[in-house]
Structure formats: structure tokens, C-alpha cells
Image (tube, rainbow, N blue to C red):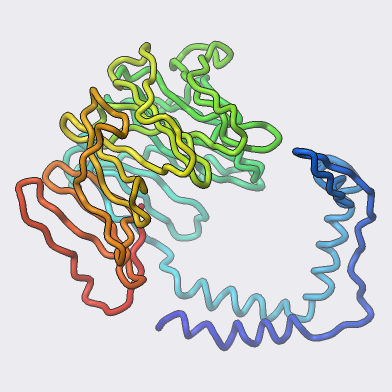
Length: 386
């Protein structure tokens, strides 16, 4: 209900913004005919020239659009400030995330009064332990017109952290490394990535996803050894099909590295023992058009969410030594009235996210037997898997 407090101010803002001003005319971009032919089909894009980000004419047109916006909205400046202050008053000036424990440390981030960015912290062993600041984004953002932090990934021995930084708002992240014991930022800097790095269990080998410089498609999985030149990085997998994008992650068990390659309708995954970064990735199930699946690991099996003969998806498992679909056995059956949207594997429980009558619900299944749904004590709510 708190959001309803903002409605009167927003309505006034929209009404004011829509008031007519016939003397101010918007800038009109010129048309330059450009024919683009793909798969034998030709289309005309009269504004193709505007993808030239450094073209002075493009920049001039964008500046003209911004000037037009400022002129049209000038009479709302006081109201804009009032609306901004009203929204800001609903936000705590100092806040802290719920901590989570991983590999002996409690991790969390906090927001400080008057600061724009998060401070990423951890505590060893106990929430009463001394706080360690891993990354202060406010410091990293100093002098930048734009700043966005990508994925944070701590090495298995807890000594190094990899993180991505975008300072141009193009989702072209440069992965950097920091020694958490000394505070030193290492010389390794890997440009044009998705921002996330995945550690092998040797504490020195990391895998990352490289983007195409023009299309920004995530197309390559690369391997880097900390302390070596980026130019020596090894290509592990290249996705030739332009309708697919690739990514890499580590199973929650920390035993396997998983490369995913997905399009709108089709999936394909590869796996490698995280203790053997010099090994070769093996395919879980070769891609079949229309077959979607995702993978995690527990015990001696891979657990697989799939639409194989299951419109609303179901959960299967298969031995790590025999991963193709002919070996999959059912764990949770398909249900026509329940959408199986995801799962998380814990030491003692399997947690399943299901959508029932439009509402996401969490189903907790014990490995020892027995299950229950988490009661959120509300008829309508929003549940988001992170």
C-alpha cells in the first residue's frame, strides 16, 4: 500500500508533462536509405546510420533531442524535484542486505548515507567477527560518469576476488582481480566480458564469457590463469550459431564447471570436473531443436529441469557417467496445472519453485523423505528466485 502514496504526485507530474507547447518542435533525424539483406530477404532501414556512436552527426542529433526534452519539460522542474524528494524519503539512507554464508564467510553489502553505490563486505566465521570491506563501489566509481559492478566471485581459498566493471553503459565489462589479504589490485584486466568469472578449484584458473564487440552476443568461453597475460588466454568453447548465447557457472556442489548454450527454444550444456581445469568439457545432452534443459549436481547425479515430454517442465536425474536423455529418470513428474520454474539443491533439501494459479510457491523436499510448502501468510505476493 505504501506505493499508493506516490500516485498523486506522479499523476500531477504526467499531467504537467503532457501540457501542450506548440512553439517547440522536436528535432527530425535525416533519412539515409540502407538496404540490409539476410537469408534472401531485403529490408530498408532509413536510420541505420544512427548506430555510429562516435559520428558527430549522431551525437549532435542526440544533443538536440536532449535539448528539446529539457525545453518541453522545463515548466515541470519544480514538480520533478518534489517528486524526487518524495520518492527518496521512502528509501532508508542506510541499509544492509541479509547476509549469507559461503565457504566459511558471511557475505553482505550495505548502503551508506549520501553514497550512491554499495559497499561489499564479509565476516569470517561469525556475524560478530571483524568486518572486511572487499569492494567499495563508491571508490571504484570515483571520476566515472557511469559505473556498474558486474559479478563478484571469490576464489575457493577465499584469498582473491574477481569482479566486472562497466564504465560506458554498454554492458562491456572488464574483469579485474583483487588480493583480499593485501588489498592489492592485480594487473590482470580482461575486457569485453559479461562481467562474471568462475573459478576452478586450483585457485588460479578462471573461466569467463567473451562478447562480440559489435552485436554484444555472448559467444565464447575463455580460460585465464591469474598472473599471466590476457593475450595467452585459451578459447574453451565458441558458439557458432548466432541464435545461441553462452555462459558458464559452477554447480552448487562446487564439483563441476558447467557451460550453457541456449537459444529461445533449445539448450545444450557441457561439464568439467572443477579440480581438472586442463581437462576437456563433455556434453550432457546434444542439442535437439525444441528440447530445453538446465543442470545442477548432487551426489553422483546431475539433476535436470527439462521440457522433455513435459510442457510445464519436470525434474529428472542422471548419473554423471551417463548423461544423455536416454539415461534420465524422473524425480518430479510433469503436472498440467503447475509450472515447474526452477530448483535449488541444498545439503538436506531440494527446494522447488512452482507457479500455481499464477502465484510462485516454494516447495521444500527433504532428501530423507517428507515435504512442505512455505507459507507466506498472504493471499497475493511476489516471490523472486535469485
